[in-house]
Length: 473
Image (tube, rainbow, N blue to C red; front, top):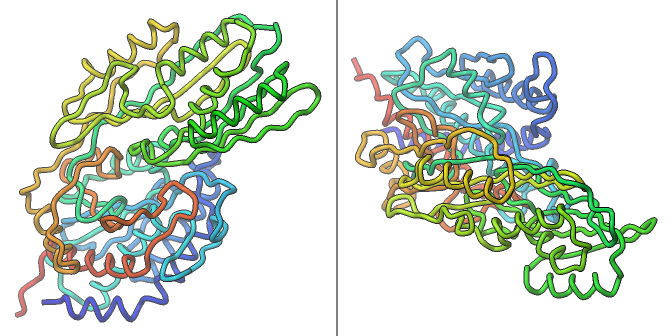
């Protein structure tokens, strides 16, 4: 009934949508040190401030929840039916972007490049304009809808924990922070830190440090080691072999008798570690090829590599390889690692199918790590999230997707945890189209403009379908 009007409206707003998205991308909203009134740092607070200005300009009723989240309500006087959740924080960036700098958005060949264009500032703009369309077209919804924009999704979603500590979730929720057609199943997750202390090995050649990874939910794209006492000929031979075997780039430099070795892999989301090349495990494998003097630290590094072998992403060596029909296989990623002569610490990220539980996952991993001499952080896994595919929420959203794409939508299962993972009746809906790799969490992240505009249209129609329309009097 309203599809044609919505389409025309969004088409008239395309230029402004792009400009608004650029304004958000220009803000470096990585999580930084907390400050008074700014729980996730300056950048996160700044992007929320910019976001609430856009909400107000769109005519929504707004509120800032102490710089954890901001919300914008459409028909706030009515009973709320729908929450739409997106986030404005972003993952770290590298120096390897080529199309543009990460926070200097640029449109090239129908795509807008910049950190957050796909995850999740672009989808947030699509959702905002969907609500703006319904408001400006004066579509008389029976029930209200709220847009929730957070600032800590990439580092644990403590922003939503704060928000839902004060507010009830809506009967229905969706987040445009994944893929079309729709995701109704998210795997469980286990993130744990392990560590070990040991006597310093002072005999040469020796390893002085190893560092890699910034976020546990990202396959580390860079890792660095400092060694001393290794000859150039031995290092060249090992590096050449490693580059061919491990699909990485290796550089080194010598200074004051020490050698700094840098390995560049390929970053990827930890839920799809097979799409990346882990620089940490590649570096550990390179170091294993070199003749360091035996010591407790080297022995512990070798044990880490035996439990997290380079190229293995299914948890086989930790004894937890598993999969099921509806959610697929378990994944494992060594995301953060630090070594010094007397101590090492690592942190892994595992995404667990529905068949996984604390008995066959958490306890097994803990036991194996402890048997290999590592102390392991306590805590249980995050349980999988599942919404019935026959539910009204899923079926109406899929119908909206099909109306614009002609593709028969089937709900999907993923390893990534989205903003709705802990909500009773929430799914992930958009914005990446099937077969399109937006380089999410990687270099040269982008959003296709046609997908951005189509998403806004789909979301507007979804709002109408889920919230209902008052009958004409």
